Length: 329
Image (tube, rainbow, N blue to C red):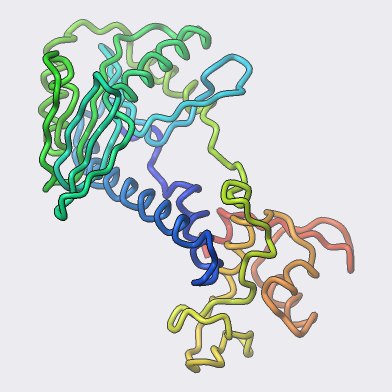
């Protein structure tokens, strides 16, 4: 049973918004595009693996995208791609969607990727990474006074064309890496290994509920990561057809002055960009400048039609740009 659904990571949405709002010649654009492409590939890999994870027995509780405090003060956090909880054991999975020839070297804490052109790229070793996550989860169980469970861990390669090699004399290192198509068969093996139920189904659900309660999404602002300011961002409403920012409110819809395309909800994405990159609260003046509205009354009428919550009165209105609401429209 899926106890915590997988949703598009907020960090990926921030990077996509930042890609839209940085000019083509901005010095940080290439770095942002690379980070965005890497995050998107990871997300697609997680979705590919999810197909097989969703086929696990109903008593297995699956939690996706957990970010959990690594200490009792909540100053540090660790992340888990996928956690499967069963009455006999827990399984931590780290999904990697990387193409090419993959050489895992746990001894040197590195993963070497060889591309088609012969070039190589080095990543931190996911085998050691997922083992650290397992130890952190074990510690988390302890300081949250949760009943202990045996914890297994796997690195799941989601790219079907990647060639996998593990450079290690330790059989445990070889067993720690599987393709995403082997998830169900490996969990069948674990079911035979951990036949004794350590927890009842009720206890298991209590563990899942506690983990969900302490889950803390990463909402740290993204602009400081790239040493950017709001003034670095392009303003206006972007046309989905020609990608220019020459689109304006026209009647009930939006009109692009460059390609003459008409859209129904182009301004929504601009509000989402503002909420993701700048602030989830904004005055009418903030939004008028960011969306380049020339008419105050037109802006106010449009914002009212969206049903946004606000604080204050008259010229001192502050709108709450709720992402969940905006994304649902």
